[in-house]
Length: 329
Image (cartoon, one colour):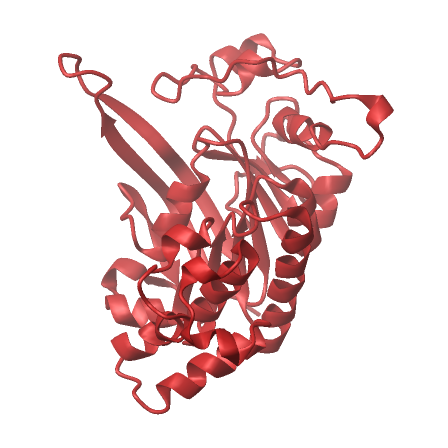
């Protein structure tokens, strides 16, 4: 039996930007995403984690078709999304962004915001009913349908954003930091809502977050990004139980404990962050790695399978006959 084709796949996708830091300075090339392979099976939740500036949001925009890749391809059910009509792609893939206030039109009513995708796609009857039905499904009372976003709390606005994303019943939802702008108690409510909706509508999520506890809670598979590359990828339980890459280990060690006496954890990464316009040679993490070897400074490790975990690290050498692999999700 042939393996199941992933629902959403990124094949060696890269995105470069031309940056000028001053009027009279030459332009530099920023490799925001650099040769990323990802695969998401239908019904799965892929969590993508990493520090700010590692390329997570740029990758999300490429998966949505909002930003074309410089190299590589994003495929939906095996088809390059660049060959799909914009509306056809939007019917199947929808976003939930980080800040619901900036992603919602402040002049529109809540009902018109949620029903706008139906209007764009020519679904006229019964548009208002479908919008109110979806608002109720995300936990908002119908009486709020004629309010504007400015009259709602942050948690309520994010529920509106979720309702708008789901009103067309997409297959895939790209969640870019959907809870980071919310209070902790509201984050938990939104997370539980997303999990309930996933089961009800058989959704596939790509979930981008800084919050490792949130990712552990919702994701079935996790990819760790550093300076535009995936450095480790594994099933969630495997990655949190046995992280391989030193960067992944540092991220997990950074989680604050509720015990005040234990203080702030020391990740061993220092206070500096490499300049993404001038990434270091070899392994991009080696200047911050406590286990760096001479090989790390000259040779970039390939992302390859090391006992059920894809990891790009010279600490785990491959047998001579072992090929590198793409990310199974």
